[in-house]
Image (cartoon, rainbow, N blue to C red; front, side, top):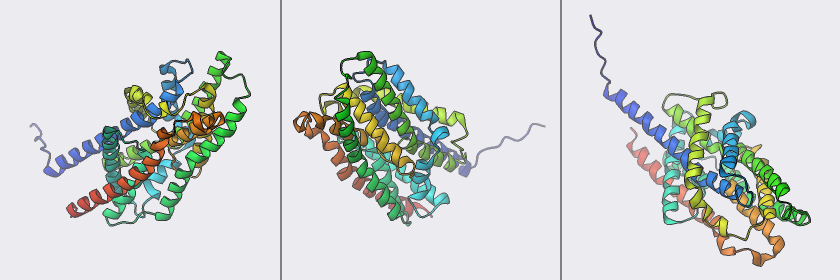
Length: 338
């Protein structure tokens, strides 16, 4: 006798659709991180170096893939469990709402040409979603994270200014082979710093999405999901490289190799320094601060100050918009939840 065919119940169909939607959200978030963070790092990495784009993309991709094994997931844990006062299904819902709002904000701002920060959008949206869903963010922890995030560009600026002074005394602009090697090493350090800190928001989103879809991941141990994350990130970076290369950072100053090296090293130190505290810091903002600090050695007039506006705009617009958007969508979801 043939076994009776099992027909999925409406509940099973609904759960399947939910799992697919959550997967789409996770993939979209990783791709956007590549299109914004990854492309910005690549754009600076290939400037003045002479190395191929494939080489620097490979360095960045391998760094992202190896991040969990080498550095752990302390910053990802901050995103997943230390920003709100609840855990379990309620905490996962808050995080997912925040992720969807952050994706929407980044896409909307990018379309309008408004500079933004994925990290700030996600932090603000998670806090807003927590309030909208009837919970409470850990305001003390969130304030600490935001304070260090705001300080990182200035730390990068100060360090790059000091490094720039030292680099000016070296023949770094005249010995092409030696300069290229140093720049490549500086980019490797920056890629590793990104993997240790800012890049971990991708792993947090994927881990929470997998848990909601009832497929819990041990991202520090399972190789395939980590490689998939790195691959989608690389696709986003390659897709957006040309657009980001024409952005504000590229026109901030007339860059020389010494500027790039100083900025990359300074940003890496600033971002690595906060990774041990589990505090997410924007690598792109720290790097922009580093470029300004390095160029100050040539005098304030060497900097096109109007192009530093993205730093201020990201804080003045992205964070409040994330809070408001997360609050609004959280209230809507809360009203729809039985």
